[in-house]
Length: 369
View (cartoon, rainbow, N blue to C red):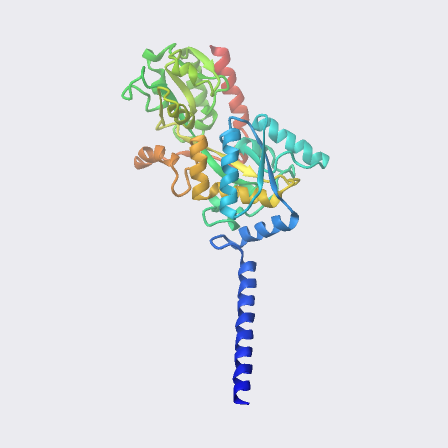
């Protein structure tokens, strides 16, 4: 009888332990993958429930590493989330055309041709009040995603920065001779030997720095128009590499890093009175086919691993995130107390006059030449 009692006690104890293990296992499954926020785990579960097994991405081949970058992002996504999804990348048109296409698809009630939309602050500000992008609280995804890097009205998350700069041929222009301020580009020794861009890139932004102002900038552009030897597209760095022009006033600094990786003789300088930072966004169209995976992709891009991979394939990252490699360019200026002007969606909303100013500067630069 005593033996049978011990057996019953053992049986009940073993059963209770098994029940506790089962409950713990179920709780762990409900909690999701360790190291991820509850919202990220919720999105993973929602994607599995909805059968989302591929991510449709479309941007130009020259953005984010194109097809090669897309494959690397796919590998990181699957590793990070323990998933097995496929990234279906299709090289697409310009960001402007893509924003227009997604807008038309939303108006027609069709599925978006991309699960995430890549665009600048200009593209995103143009989509305000058009009910194209899902307004989502991206800060729930990660402590790294703060309100400072989330787009106006939660339209998307800022994934990388573009820093305005003067790019130059490092074999033909010494580091001691490069401009430090914008008006240094008007030095007589550069007359006819430097270029600017056909769309007067970045000057409209610089005009809103405290050192300038719209009217002062118009006066500068009139002088620059008589000083430059030609107008080029911002992507035509090879014309600086060959020495056709000694400098490009102004462009973005990350293109020089890309060219230098190919051993091109290029350098870049961030000007003390003309430092601006633009931002590129990822947002989810309301009619996305795979909205849960799309948000997980945005989160992945903001992780340390995602930002490192972004810098590897595109030579830039977000200057405000911890560990940013592109922020190094701004250290010398910030040490002098010089703060870059951030041009984001809110800036565009607060300064609608920038569009007219941009048109005026473009006209002056072209016509005065």
